[in-house]
Image 1 (cartoon, rainbow, N blue to C red):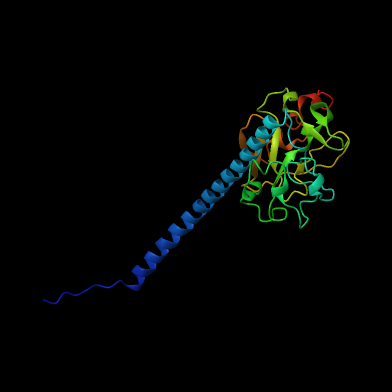
Image 2 (cartoon, rainbow, N blue to C red):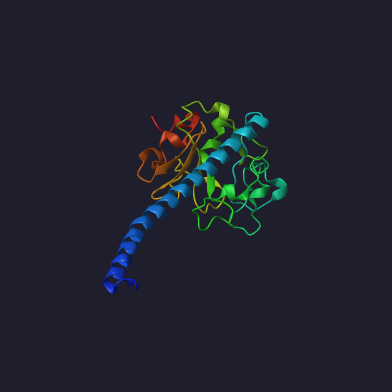
Length: 234
């Protein structure tokens, strides 16, 4: 018996192709959104690890955190225990592995956001809040320009104070919100669908949005330890 095999017509093939195209058009944005969310969570995890390492450092150094970075000339022999090396993070010789936190967090990829296409010198996306280094909440070194924060002096709610932020391509790992003496401020990098990672003193991390006034108003108490904040926000 001869059995005739029915082949697809051109119209049927076009219908199948159209259905596949519709499915792809529907799924691709969803998959892209899911990948973006995963990278945002990876960024939050990096910020959390930096915060934890900072806390571990303070336990080993008499309730003091490492000094902040600055964009002066790189000097590995006299870096004053900065969390990342002092000096411009754009310099070719900049190396996060020479920072004070690296022995506690020895993975270069943790210092850069997975969504950052241009981390400073291919290594750094994050910065510490510069206001944590105010003289009323820190102890000085032999250099008058370098201080070491004492977290025991931070007296406000621990879930309110920003410690680490994804600045994106920072010049020195030192995030400078607006202060009374200057109108200059660094700006977070809103790379995760209009949000970025913020790490807080109590250890929690969240993706904060660009329209969250709590985080975008640099005069907000979120950016100032209470001892400094009294003079700024009534």
